[in-house]
Structures are given as C-alpha cells and as structure tokens.
Amino acid sequence: MVFQKNASFAQTETNTFTAKQSLYVELGGTAGRYAINYGKVFHQSGKLKLNASAGFSMWSNKLNSKTTWLPVVPLEFSAFYGKSNHHLEMGIGFTSGLDRTLEFDSQTLETNEKVVFDAFIPLRIGYRYQKPEGGFFFRVGYTPFFNVPLGGREEWNFDPRFAGISFGKSF
Image (cartoon, rainbow, N blue to C red; front, side, top):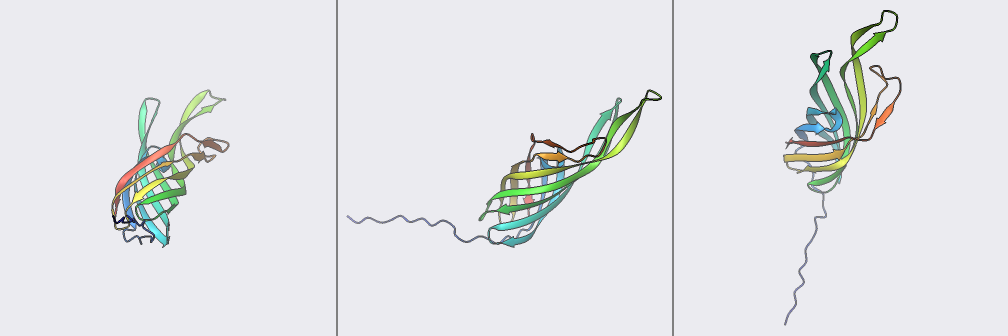
C-alpha cells in the first residue's frame, strides 16, 4: 500500500493590479447616505495598494415644508492590504456639502433660513473584494466620522454609528 501526500500550495505571490480604476455606488460610508464614486489605485507595492476616490451625491433637505436638493462631495484616501482578491482596507476621507439650517434672531424673534457649508471626516476599516484583473468590485466597512465645527456647529464631535457598503466594477 502506497500513501501519497496531498499537497496544496497557497498562493505565495501577490498579483499586480492591472485594473487600477473602479466605478461604484456606495450606500452609507464616506458620503453618509449614498454616492456614485470613481476610484483609482495610484501605488502598489507587494500586498499593499494605495487608492484615492472621489464621488458625488445629492441630499434632500426638508425645512419649513420646502425640499431642497444639496450637493455632497466625498473624497477618500485608502490603503488595502492582501493577496489576490481579498483585502483589509483602512482609510480616511473628507466629505463636504451644503446644508440648510434655521437661524433664530432674538431681537426680531424671527427665524431665517440659511444655506451653510458642512463637512465631516470619515474613517474606514473593512473588507474589500477586488480582482487584480478587474471585474466585480465589492467592499463593506465600518465608517465612523468626526463632524467638523462648521454649519452652525461650534465644536468637533464624533459619531461612531456608521457603516457602508459598495458595489461596482473595477477596470
């Protein structure tokens, strides 16, 4: 009786990304609600890839029974680490947009509607599925954020209750 060893070899080499661009929709995440994003891997070294992305979204704001659509622009820098298709992703972003608030004038006792610049700084830690040669792209992450003291806020605050999921294509 002859016994054979069944040897399986794990992939030891990392694959170079030839599909460095991605187009995807993100729900939650760095935009807060949703965004359409474009990303690009601008550096890779072994298992480490560096990526930058920019997106666009329109948020509805209902104030005094009037709905206004306001633009939001999420920007993100992330690093993802892993062999082949599966990666740990970590990143930081800056999301800016316009918001509407009510301002109360204590002398005239009137409220005035005001459009203000607003911004927050999202963080990311999550999983990223992206094939080096391109195709389906997916990621999910925990994305807490810091509110920047703008738009009527007087101090920084941290919101730990956020996450995001992205679907798209890399090419």
